[in-house]
Image (cartoon, rainbow, N blue to C red; front, side, top):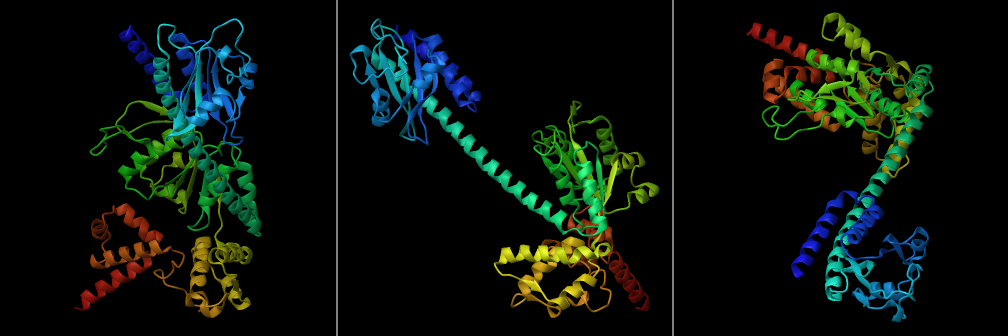
Length: 520
């Protein structure tokens, strides 16, 4: 008999452990557990009662053998009845005959006390030694089995239930953190979006806004054209947030950030063993963006081989991971951006014509700041407000300083302006930003050199630029040798030279080196 009971217990515990996947729906998981107890053992009725964090009362979360009405009646205060006693003492309790137990309240009205001799057993559900609820049943194994065996087994089941509750609470807590983060990000985006629309006063930017509103709800691919620093990434995000895909991922990929072979695996993923170092399969960015939007920045830098794969995806919405023959289909909207003239790239053969027309369904030209000078004062006000909040001081620009900044051409566009305002906030002693605080190239009337042009660069970009220049200088301005020293491809160093505006500077240094050698 004892062996038979042990086998039965193991079978029940095994069945309970198999439903761990239902833990996200806690009430359903608990109902399933009670169903398993009923099907396998001589249990008539059972309830899982958990403490409600708001009221402190004990409420029936799951039941077996009770109607919906009977279940709703099961509300107990912590000092009430057998259930309250078990919760308070955190100790098991047995009622051999509920008709003779004054503490048994029969609140659910589910038991006919006058006709049946019913045994009631309850054990605390404890999490980290503290009670969080009560598991109670009417009978368990039957007349031949002792109450001690019933209690021992119920205590094991209660421990499993406590783990289910713990996992469920952890998941809900994580979901709440993510929900708050999502609200925060949306609020931040909403603020940036509002500024984007409120700041613009120029006709060209108002036209851009109208185009964004029209294209956002559609399924069309969008191509953002414009110089670096004009806000193309922000516009791509706004289009996504205004679309029906807003609740799905927005995935950003910079097409110049990785070498060609790594970029392909980044975009499309790979299978285990696809190449040396591929110790496990990896999902690509297109799969991550399923249902949402993928933003391909600097699309003009893609190699012809990758352009071919991207074209196929645009045509058929399918691809294969590296090292796999299995075709994967995803629903992704593409927004691409470039500061290159893609029509020129098509003419020179560096960009596929068919891909260009696929991407160019809805082009949006984002104008540089020099072409919308009427937006400069309000943009400056926006960045000064932002930096004032960050630094806890109310900064302002003098009329003379504003005049200089309005006349300036801003080759680094909005990014340059934002970085300049932060730089000024650090440098000025008081709260006024005057002409004397501005970099000399802004008001000297002289054209700055290509090397000094990038005042818009971040500190990290400044360091990167210096490293590139130093490597070129050490390698007599030969790009291939400098690239090898830095661990970059020729395409990558070429992109950085263009990004930092070093072409003219390198040409001059190279010519200077040649003339020096000739004189020698």
